[in-house]
Amino acid sequence: MEFLVNMKAPTHDHGHQAVPSDLALRVKALESLLVEKGLVDPAALDELIDTYENKVGPRNGARVVARAWVDPAYKQRLLTEATAAIAELGYGGRGGEHMVVVENTPKLHNLIVCTLCSCYPWPVLGLPPVWYKSAQYRSRAVIDPRGVLREFGLELGDDVEVRVWDSTAELRYLVLPERPLGTEKLSEDALAALVTRDAMIGVADVRLPKPGDHP
Amino acid sequence: MNSVHDMGGMHGMGPIQNEKDEPVFHERWEARTFALTLVMAAWRKWTLDGSRHERELIPAAEYLRMSYYEKWLAALVELLVKSSLVTGAEVESGKPTPSSPKAIPPLTADKVLPLVARGQSASRDVALVPRFQLGQRVRARNIHPTGHTRLPRYTRGKLGTIDRDHGVFVFPDTNAHFLGEKPQHVYSVRFAASELWGDQAAPRDAVCVDMWDDYLEPA
Image 1: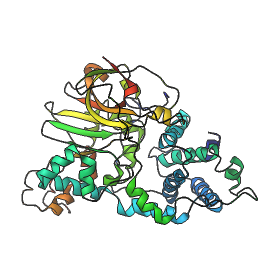
Image 2: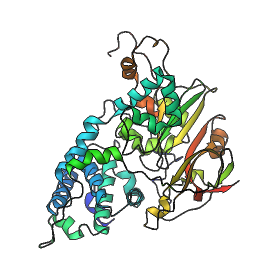
Image 3: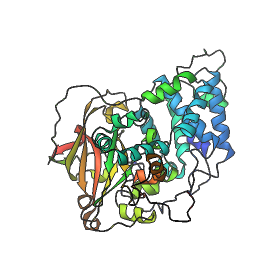
Image 4: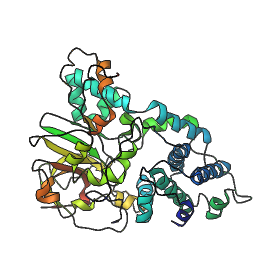
């Protein structure tokens, strides 16, 4: 790693900000070099960034969850052949070639982690948040899942099994959260609007907004 | 390799910091680093497993200090130089070596969306008899490979149960090092939390870990 010595950045506990301009300059120089050598089409970079900033994200996963809530046959397919069921809604590909969906019930709570790196179901959730990729989450999710959930505001009883899925291979996991009570009359779109990224990772449940909350 | 990237079960990393309304990228250089890494992979000079391993090779203290995309950048530069796509001198100067030939990028903008939609499957359509059956008790092998592996330390020597058979996949331990794909079955192995962590674990809890045939032995 001889080039590391030239990439020193100040220690920062948030892991992403206070970026020295040195890093920005290094990336810019590297990109120019690769473009000048004909190794990279800069328009391809723009297209990729646009895809993951604007087209792929947790709204995709929320649509999958809402469909499963309103359509029992779809839910069955989702739990047995997740990749194909997700493809029915038009999602799939890079980072989600082999999907597994795990269902939360009153007696079982699922939690997704990648202790070894940052594996995450891109087509349905987009790119992972910083906390998911952090040493804090990766180290603790498997040994202290209940403590982690408590920090996210979720307290689970002793009668609930917590099952952690460590994404060590090329399977990518998505949690199917429980449908909240009192949503019987909501449309599929309204249901999808309730589903959060965190609920599909398993660090939150899905709740109806309290009166007075902003939608 | 037993470096700090294999961090399941470690203490001392501190509380989780959950940023509200987090952007996909915090800085433009992060977005460019992400995209450069994906686009350069189209040259097929390394495998996905190989690029993961390159990040694991970052010295442990540096690995913990660096932000996520700093690690990606460091690994990308190493991969570029090791694969001779660029030279160290070119990285230092930011300029191509004079009279070096100009290449044609394999991944143009029009090919990006089809590539993203297609993905790159690591499963292999090979008829292989699984070594283990659903419900079978197994032990994760107590091995300590010095190269790339996806067998987390916290599972080694522990007893679990085969929960699902995901089919046949490329084996990262060899594929990362260009030693062949060595396709084999991958299973979801369920470990009782108390088997992994002792009495401090909640009695009902479990951890499911995806494991290749070569990581397992009959219990």
